[in-house]
Length: 280
Image 1 (tube, helix red, strand yellow):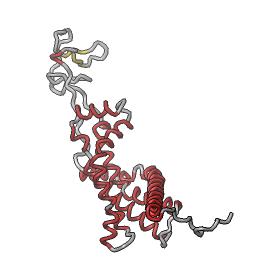
Image 2 (image 1 turned 90 degrees about the vertical axis):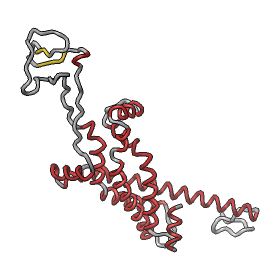
Image 3 (image 1 turned 180 degrees about the horizontal axis):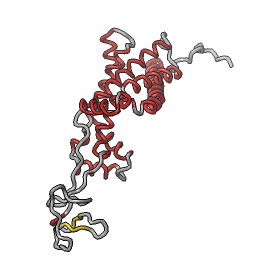
Image 4 (image 1 turned 90 degrees about the horizontal axis):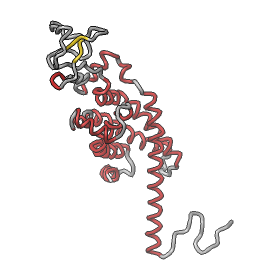
């Protein structure tokens, strides 16, 4: 694995840099595949679509395939520092908790929770920017549709436009309604409303950061930091503990199979002398 190769190059059994570098490489490969699913997940969480496939089809038709990677750059910029901080902090905390390397499940839980909290807190500003970029097309206020010819389907005609006669009912003309006098489009093919897509609020990572800072101050970058930390602390703790426990179990099983194939007998459990009946 990457971690083992880096540790071998550093001539160390376990180094925090090795954990950070390995996680950064894995994050780059992971985000290249999972960013489109993250975009779909956020749209579904906003309640805008009924299912995964309908959401994907709508994004592809309305916004194009690049929309699935609209925030890939900021995702990488957020997740790579997150992985580096989380991996390095996890290795350092485990060495601090158990310098002899004889780790237990409680060590994995504590190191995982601490590294998850620190990494989530430090990268929260980038997570805010990423979320704004991914959801701006569905949270911006829609622009009123325009009838072919320039009148607004939702209200009065644009400034300077002449209102048609009140009794004109020819197809394609704009007629005032009886109740409000506002202009509406007749439902004909010649005067079908032309839907205007809202202009994007954020055009790039840097512009989004500038706008958030100008409109909301530094506090805007820390929106959701508390729930994010509370989410990542147990998540990282459980993930690391499960990973290390399964790895240790597989390693022990492999050693026992290797010993059995060479000697024909399983190694005695700790504290038991081969050939003697263990005390009870």
